[in-house]
Length: 245
Image (cartoon, rainbow, N blue to C red; front, top):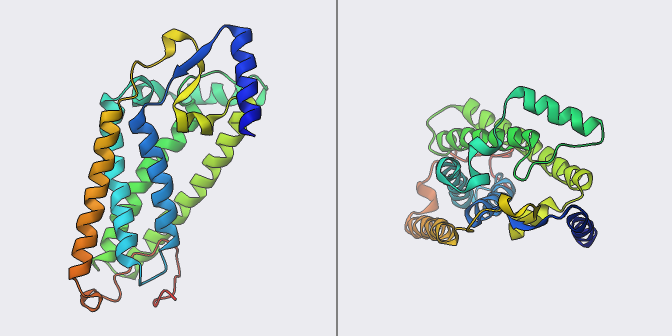
């Protein structure tokens, strides 16, 4: 499938005079794939008491990454900024209408529909993180754990819709959007390219994540599991068994 998309993109580029340009900087790509891995890990460890600390660490990491993404959305490269892809409701409606007509409007960065999903996932990550923190630290009743699971389930559904939409957009626009988020490159005019991938910032993000994981691992090795409240498990999935097995 990737080869098909790549060949189509190359043919379109030759026909329209476009070139291969850098669109997604390294911090955006690192953030994206870290969030994918972290959410998958948090979901898989949600019901297990044994992996409770890991589950919480993954969730807190996601919240921290969202904080970084908000900052980067204000000061990052051209297509990373919210001002470049968060558009008016009229723009969203116009884009959706172009999809229905079979002639989708072209956007170098995120399209208006994708922007809605991105903003929603950022907000939902914080909602999951806040409710998860409360459940993990027993600051609320059972309702908080249920709310945490409900928000996480809604986020899972949104992620699934987002993946389907990306695959559909790749077909409609005849470009490999998943591959672009790996390499950072898409087809476009030379003047649409960003100047640098900003790998230095991406490395700082990775160092911060690894340092956080190390501190959590070190703290966990010094804290007996029995000292933790048995009812403090932060469930991602609602109605999970209390023993996690």
